[in-house]
Image: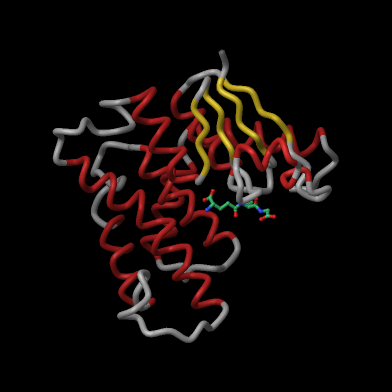
Length: 207
Ligand SMILES: N[C@@H](CCC(=O)N[C@@H](CS)C(=O)NCC(=O)O)C(=O)O
């Protein structure tokens, strides 16, 4: 049974297409019209009570939350390649940066953009400059987060960096731009972008 991704090309589901292309597994895309509110339909709320995309269905498994989808897929279909094995010390670095994206970069960048008032010691994402320095350290002096070895953590973390740079939600520090360029050279990312564009064109959406 093929993996099904509930998808819209202007959503985080576009990044899951990149994950699937890196894995090289077959999958079906099911277009969900966000403009028409199809993501709030009862049949989708059963799959994701948040009423949000992406949603991935793999047989009996239902996964939501982009980072969780990436970690699930890599463990299930690419253990030892896109996901380090549980007894590999690289697994620690892998999990660390995979979770840094949704738990620190996303809220931290939104907090900055929206000028939220909070105490950095009480907010899980801390202060903005520390976040930026931590990110710079993660991608400086190496090709990818795990060194020469590309992993699903790069899709999760790197996808967030690329998205935030594109929409000016992240300071375009040289280390981030260079890392984004290294990721852009990946054939799987290029295939994913082409597939997302095809869906957008099929539905009359302008990328
Ligand atoms: N934390 C979720 C966020 C999901 C999310 O916010 N999805 C957006 C599209 S990128 C969405 O479905 N928005 C529609 C809505 O909330 O009504 C993840 O990482 O997957």
